[in-house]
Length: 366
Image (cartoon, rainbow, N blue to C red; front, top):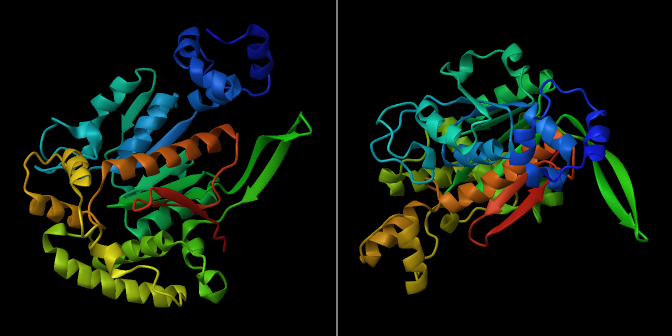
C-alpha cells in the first residue's frame, strides 16, 4: 500500500480520530499519504465541510475536496438550474431544468469518490444559527451577497470554525480565508539539516478586512483585482442581484458608478479598475486565440463577430471554466492545509488575474 507499519503506528498515536483509516482507504489515498502523510490524511477523513453555493467555483472546490478524501461534505444551494446553464458547472450536465443545483449535482459528485458522504441541506442559509456551523471543521461560501458572507463568517468566527469564501467574474476571481488563530508547521532547510518550524498566524473576519481603508500608504501596490472584488460585491449588495449580460451596456454604466463609489469608500487615490476591466478586454482577437475560445465557449461556427461578442460578455460577466478551476484549486488546497495544519496558508486574500494568468496574495488585517 505504500505505507510502512512503523510510520503508521507512530503517526496514529498523535491524534484521536473518530474514524480510523481502513486498508481500502489507505490504498485509495496512497499517493496523497505519501505526499502529506498518514496523519494529515486521517484528519481529512475525519473532517466535515460545509459548501454554500454550487456555481462553477463551488463545483471546483467540491470536486477537489471529494477527491482528497474528506469524509462528510454538506452542500447548500437551491438555485434552480436554468434552461441554458453555464458550462463551468460540470456536475449539472443532463439534469432536470429548475431542479436545485445541489440536488442536481449530488449523483455526479458521489461518483467521484463513493467513500465520501454527500449530504444536501435544502434550508435557506438565512435560517441557520451559530450552532449549525459549529458542527463543521470548515465552511466555504460562494455566489452569495456580501451581507450573507459577512454574517456567516461572523457566526463561524464566534464558534472557532475556519471560514473561506470566493467568487469569479469572467477573467477575475478571489478567495478569502479566516482561519482565526491558526497554527501550522513547515520544514526549514538549514545547512543540509531539516528543522520543523511551528508558526501561528492571526486572521480577521471578512467584514473588518473589507473595512480597512487602502489609503495612500499601500495604495501604490494594492492589487487591482482586490478593488474589483469590492466593486462586484458592492454591485450585488446595492442592486440585490448579479450582473445581467443581456443588458451589458446599461450594466457597465452602473458598474462604473459603483466603481467610483467603491474607490472613494476605500480611500483609493488611483483608479485601479479601468473601463476595459469592466467590459472591453481583448479588442483584437487573433485566429489562434479564436480557435481556443470557440472550443472553450462551445461555439461551433466561424462567425468571428459572434465570438467577439461572447468574449466581451465574459470580461466581468458570467463564469469561465479555467478561471473557476484556477481559483477553486487554490481554495480547496487552502482548506486542506487548514484542516491538516501543514504548510503555509494564504494570509488572507488570494486574487487571480486571468489577463496575465497570475495569482497574488494580499494581507489585509483589521
